Length: 300
Image (cartoon, rainbow, N blue to C red; front, side, top):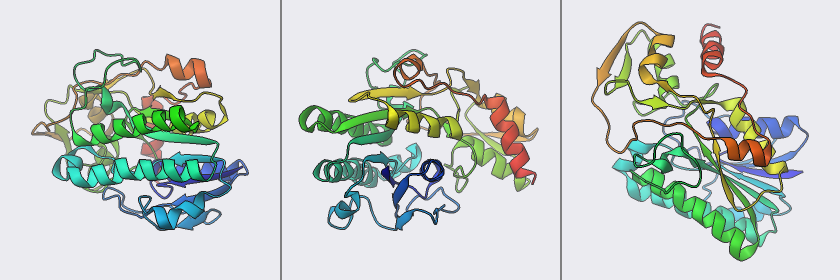
């Protein structure tokens, strides 16, 4: 199968590229290396790689030719930077997703897998979060990602493009972003420990998150590609959550508390029954095992 991965040199995208190539697929990658949290980018030399902006319709549309499945991951993917620059997030996330959808439609792509976010649930919904709950977007990032979901649904309803939106819950693992103060918490904690710094816990640290290991997220994309499901949204989370203080204690004895951040929910927890029942996805890596994997990685 010929597949195209936008954001395919980033954290999640590069793992999907590697898996697709390992499975014998031909892969095209689009990435402009704009992520500010990535310490480095991961280009698989067995893919056809293009350093280009996914929003650039004129120079990307031909890359979708003869592609059967698109995995759309290219995005501004952090809450706090989006609060500082909403215009950039709207441009990259809404225009970028719509451009990828339009190119897919014009070139006859059979399936489109969209990477979305659990931040769509906000504070007004009670955990565990299920896909039929109302959106409660607390920041520009979640607004733009939900807009992408709605564009995917529209392209399915109006144009027959088979789309699935996957709402990720706090993805972590090898190659995770570690650069800057707004990097995801587990990667940031490991980097702080490596540098002999105290771990910085936002607020009181009792906020809870459902953390999902990268290999489980990759598997969800592969299963979505192989499924017959279309026009739907699926939660991709473990169904177990931990406090930030618990995470900190797993990694280091030295931590400090910093000011709470605006625009973030208190707790997340996935109801993943829909993904289990519709695409056969089951998370396999517990947080404790995932942390141990990363400890081994950082010690070697």
